[in-house]
Length: 65
Image (tube, rainbow, N blue to C red; front, top):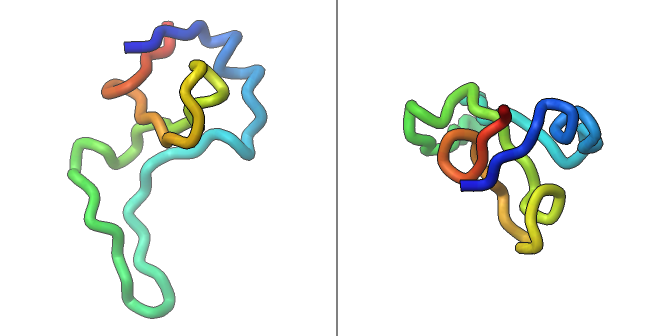
């Protein structure tokens, strides 16, 4: 698991961060997410590791200390 500080997290531009949410699209489509993902922070992998092209989830791939 990758560990980053709150300061490092705050330096990442918002366009590379997000949060898992359950939302229903206009066409009725709803993402099939595990309930434990809802509300967890996400970040693009290249922002906190050498890996590129992955979406990382807090508590599964990284933690903020």
